[in-house]
Amino acid sequence: MILHELAEICIFKTRGIPINKNTFIKYPNIAYEIHLKAMEIELDYASSRNNKNWIKKRLIDIESYLNDPNMPRELIKNCIKILKKFRGAK
Image (cartoon, rainbow, N blue to C red; front, top):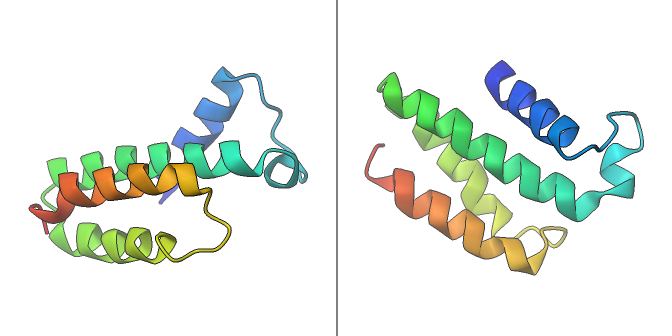
């Protein structure tokens, strides 16, 4: 989980977006996009460690994003891509 948070922070910083209490309110679509990128980084790491339980847990989380009314519709394809990439690893 720490890897995920660090990845998000690094991606926000790389894009020049400040990290503060308003970041997710001011940049909701970007926050979701970055969250998915961090999720993929986290799952790549879990896969390299053959941590199938963690992968399974996080894929359930991603599946729930498909029905999240706040998830930007254009990012659903990213969710599906991550699910396809890691479903064989669980």
